[in-house]
Amino acid sequence: MIVRMSKVEIVGPKDLLQESIVLLRDAGIFQIEPAAVGFIEKEAQEHIRSFSLDEKTGVERLYLEDLRLKIEELFSFLPALPVRESYIDPASIAHTIAGTVERHTCQTRELSEQRDALQTERSELERYAIFLGGLSMLMDSTRETPDLDFIGLTIKEPEMVPRLREVLSRITDWKFEFQTEPAEDGSLVGLITVEKSIADRVKKTLSDEHVPELTFPASFGTLSFPQKIAYVKERTGRVSAEIDRIQEDLLRFARRWTPLYKSVREWIDDRLALLKTTASAYETRMCFFIHGWMPSRDMARLRKIMEGAFKTQVVVVEKEMREEDLERVPIVLKNPAYFRPFELMTSLLPLPAYTSYDPTPFIGIFFPIFFGIILGDAGYGLVLILLTLYLRKRFRKNKAVHDGATILLIASLYSIFFGVLYGEFFGDLPERYFHLQPLVVERRTAIVPMLLFSLAIGVAHIVFGLVLGAINAFQRNVKREGLFKVLSIVIICCIIAIIASLSGIIPLVFTRPVVLVILFLTPLLFFAGGVLAPLEFLKSIGNIISYVRIMAIGLTSVLLAYTANELGGLTGDVVTGVIIAGLIHVLNIVLGVFSPTIHALRLHYVEFFSKFIEHGGRKFEPLRK
Image (cartoon, rainbow, N blue to C red; front, side):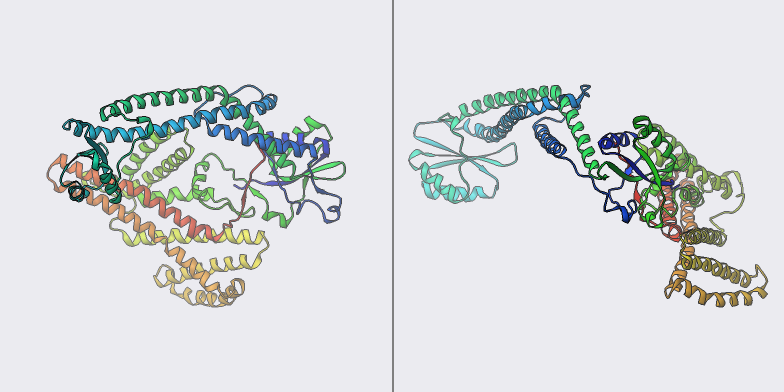
């Protein structure tokens, strides 16, 4: 249901404005309207102006915004971790925090920069470790001598190896040794051994071939390969230990100071929001004016709050709701406990206009029925009930899952009900093994009756939607739209009467008078709906025909269940038959959840709601912390 709203004006002395806004925020039932349209009469607009913040308040706002930016900068250097809540009043320590935040930011920034530099160095050392690890295996087979030089390479493309051998043989006159070894990262590590006199030429040639020598930082000095390997391992250990120490310092700092800074930041946000809200008020030379909306049921409560705080100094006035206000009224949906879970489905739609209807009760009534008609299997319904009971217990704190499970539980009960009428329990098992006949109809063979039943549901649903649309149109004083919907209802009923007379259900003598009624009403239909009236009417007819999907999807489900039982029986083995039939039934249950849900919702969203729901409402967003 759409909650009745009130248009409210709050008036009081200017020096009580912020205290009044704090009370409104704590109550959480009032939405401030920043625009004055519809609240301030034209003759009074020259005396009432937007509230202007004094110099002191402006300085406070700039100070708080700057402090918040500094706190955010500090948090950017701290690790994110759950922390305890601070019970110190943030307003009392805000000035102290302002004096410490820059020092703490410098301290944590320095630690963070040191950690980042060390992490970069560790990444480089790990890269060198991979390279040297591959070289160490090659060095084991090579003896170091003063006349030889060793050149290490990282070869990313193995097809480069023959090319390098050819180049090296040309430069060194075959006086070289070139060995390769796969490294841990998948690349090839190469070691070239040449005489020192030609080593520079080799390095230059390698550079020209875009295979440069891997150079080491200056800290490696003139260390030999074995010494470099030992140095990398030792340095990596020291760097990792230093990173861990810095990280621990940052964690220790965060555990100690984050609760305080977080508390102050939340207080700053609250204070800035309060100052921003103050700018939405209006003033005269001595008074303030706050305009807004609230549920009518809370008017007495708000008056009691204001009277308790200010006696008669601040007055709450309910103003007259005008026709032009109806487009601006915020929307609150409030439904009984049974319908509340179905708000999950209506949340997918835009909010209805204030003068329209809440779609939630309609989905709550018709969706489970459509679901049960389509699935219509008592066995499947029992399985789904067990599933929903588990989901409701397992996800008790997850509102979306809990509401979805509740909807499925209600729909499953309807599935059991219609399953009993159809005589279906995991398909045709009651008839197959116990020779039980359906109470009403066997869907697998009664295709035409089910088709007519689906069309009858469509007629009832669409006509009901048109009735609601006509009522809503007349209430909004849009008489031509209301007349068009009434005429559509009458012509639809006439068409049904013609089909019934031609089918022999009612006497054929009624056909001619009904046709004359349709011919008489057609010009009125053009008058009420305009030149597009026939298209709109045909759209309603198409909407009714669309309800045939209820029969079609249901028939698919029962045929798949029948197929599962047939295949299970053809195996000749009980265990194999149960497994095969069970797997197909599981698939059918999964399809039986999604297909009826999608198609039943489509019948509501597209066919039914288009007849009477008007969208365009805005959400009620009360002032609160």
